[in-house]
Image 1 (cartoon, one colour):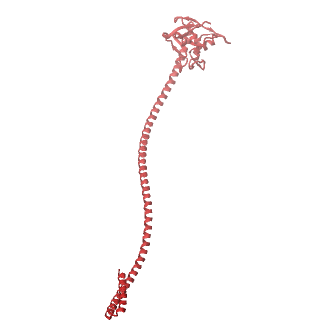
Image 2 (tube, helix red, strand yellow; image 1 turned 60 degrees about the vertical axis):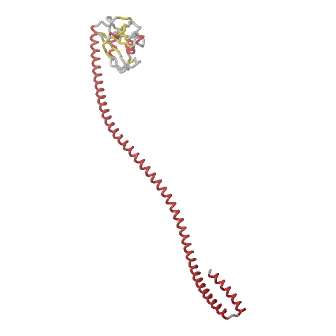
Image 3 (cartoon, rainbow, N blue to C red; image 1 turned 90 degrees about the vertical axis):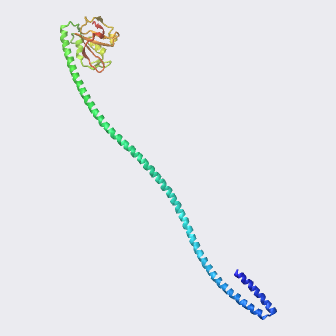
Length: 303
């Protein structure tokens, strides 16, 4: 604005100069010269101020550039800070995930520990139960051993009793009229089936057996009579159809006792109310008192 006023005044001065030449008024010239000096002083002031302003402007431009550079650096730092912040945010997310995973694992660990504690408790209970079971097993084994020993003792007693019965039967046979069968062999002679059967006392019962390795009821009868040269049918029901039927009062040692209208069991009468037979699985050939109520009929085999 000052520069504009300066230009207006300069133009006005020049115009006055032209007027001075035309009119040549001394007073007017003096005034104009004063005005000129005033304007020149103003110009000088303005130029001085201009120089100052230009200097300030230059300094400001330098400062601006410095600030701009600083601003650019700040922008770079802000960008880096943003990137770091973004990375930190990602890290925070990762940390959050890790914390969640850690919490999950701790919870899982707690559950596992509880299960382990329960398992440990069950193991302890099972061990205690196992100790009790072992004690029970030991008790049962001891009882089993005692029973087995008792069985052995009873078997020995039974064996002795059977031997005693055999001796008694042998003595009874001397006083009893016994039918004898002639044996076809090199030594020859006469024998009773009950006497021969007594030799096989203690042989185990074997279903279908007909040898001294094991007999069933009809197999024993078949084997005894085979030694006397008489071949009988193999089963009790068929043996029941052979021979002559006799009464209980007529029964002699060697006669066959049948059990069941269609015989399911057969024994050899030994005299004086006793018989020799192979009773059942788990038993042996033995003497036993006859239960006449169960005897269906009595047969005598004729040579």
